[in-house]
Image 1 (tube, rainbow, N blue to C red):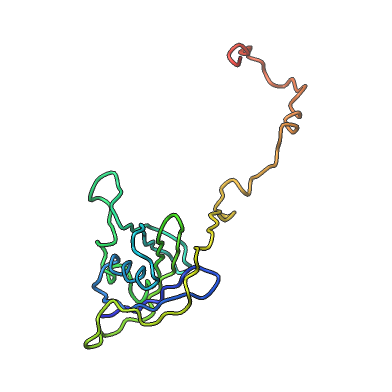
Image 2 (cartoon, rainbow, N blue to C red; image 1 turned 180 degrees about the vertical axis):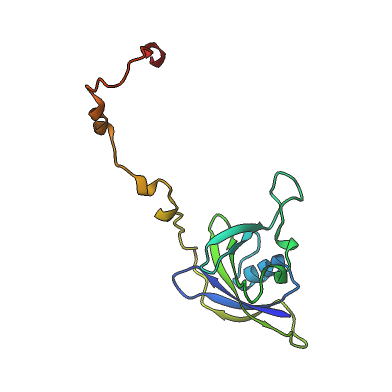
Length: 179
């Protein structure tokens, strides 16, 4: 089978490529097809990330095994596209060059029979010119993910004055330990 992906650059303008690739190819093959179709030289590190239906990033699938135990971490070349993506699981995130953070939303748009004589992977359609620089990423957590955010009490040193003169606390005489 042939997987047809729409690969969209996370940018202000519409910049995307449609890529056809065999379902039995690996994520590493898709990585190569993406950086070639967008005009990168392929000399930078990249990773794929699984995600949910609303593009929330989940597990990383790196190019290289950087784990503590060699061979323990699964990498791009370990995954066939058909192992990870299908008609129900259609989305994955691709990040190229961790300095510039070129981020792409990769979505499986169609699963079709291969065409006789076609060579895969193939860039089927190209729209938009690559900008000179990636957009700046803002890595801020949502407040609902901040376990302390809803309990922010805005207390400062002046608020601690409320305990002055309160003799209800027992003095254990350990002031020498606090010097």
